[in-house]
Image (cartoon, rainbow, N blue to C red):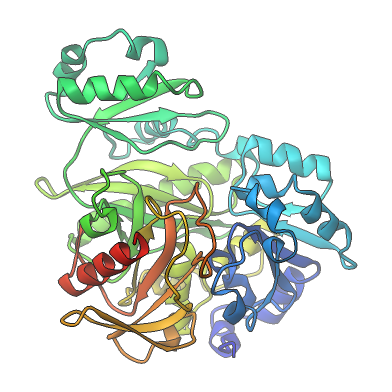
Length: 481
C-alpha cells in the first residue's frame, strides 16, 4: 500500500493538486535495465509506468506500487542483447510498445547523450530530460575543472594529455609535477562515461596503465590530477525556477575490501551512507555552495532538474574539492528520495525535477523544503560486485532479511521493498537488479543487487562495520560457489 503524502506536502506546496494535475496531463514512462531505480514517481503520480529490460526478483513486489512492463518476460532473446537503456530505444519490441500507447505519453530519461537524443528524434517521441548542449561545459572532468577555476571554486589541479603523448612521455616527468600519487582517467566525448580510474604511484603503475590504454582506441585523452587521500563524498542538486535545491553531503563507498572479494580496486562507487557525517559544518557548507554555484551556471545554459557533484575530502587539511559533475540523475538519488519519503514532510527531488522539466512554475516554500532535504536519516546501501559471478546460484527471494554474524546465518523474514517496511535495525533489504535463481548475471553492470540498511554502516569510504562486512563476505563467497 502506498503511503499518503498529500496532507504534509500541501503545507509547502499550496497548489499541489494543480501541480500534480499538470504533471499527469500525459502518461509518464520511466525506462531502463531494472525497475527499482525508477520507482519514485509512482508514489505521487497515478499514471506513471515503468518499462524494464530485466526480469528481476523484485519485479513482483514492485508491481503492487506501479505498472511495470518487462521485455525479458516476453522476449528473452531480445532482452539478452540489451546492455544499457540507450540500446532499448532501438529495440523493435520497445518501439512497438510505444506505438501501442492509446494515451499521449512522455519518456522520462535519467541520462541523456547525443546518441540518445538523436535516437529520440528519430522515434519522434516526447521526452523529459536535458539536451546535451545545456551541460557540455561539465560533461568531462577536465571541462568541469575549467569551470571550477572560472567560478573560483575549490578544485584540484588537472592536466590533459592526448593518447599520443601518453605513449611517449616518461613517468618521472609527470610525477615531478605534483610529487605525489596521481589519478588518471580516460575521457570519451560521445558518452561522457569514464572507465575506472588508474592510481599511479610508481614506474610499474605507469607501465601497467599504458599497456591497458594501448588496447583502447576509443578514448581521446587522459586527465591527470593529484590523488587526495580521504573520503569520497557527493551532493545532489536540483535546478528549479526558484533556485537550486541541495541535499546533505553523502558518504560514498569505494573499494570496500569485502565487496571487492579479492578483485583489484576499481574506484567505482559501491553505495552510500546517508547517516554518516565525519566532517565539519564548514566542509558541508562549502560543498553546498559549490553545488549551488554550479547549478546556477547550468541554469543559465538552460539545464533543469537533477544533477550531482562528487567530492573528495582531505581530512589532513579539512578541505573539500569537487572532482566531477554528473548532469543526470545521480546513481543514489532514488534511495536518497526513499529516505526523504520515509519522513513524509516534503516531496523528493524527482518531484521538483519534473516540475522544472515540464515548466510548472508554481510557488512552493523553497526555504523549508531546502532545509528538510538536508536532514539526515540513518539509511545506507551497498551493492555486491558482479565480477566472478556469471549465474545466480542462490535461491534468494527479494525482500527483508536478518543476519546472525556468529552463525553466519541469513534468514528471510518477509516481502518488502522500502525502508518503511523494516521493523528494526537488525533487518535489511536485499533487492534492486537481483537475478532470479538460475538466470545469467548482466555482464556490463557492476552490481548484482543492493543491501539496504535502516542505519549507518560506514567506518569510512572503504570500511564498513564488522557485522556488515561479515554479511557481505558470506554472500560474496556463496554467490561464487
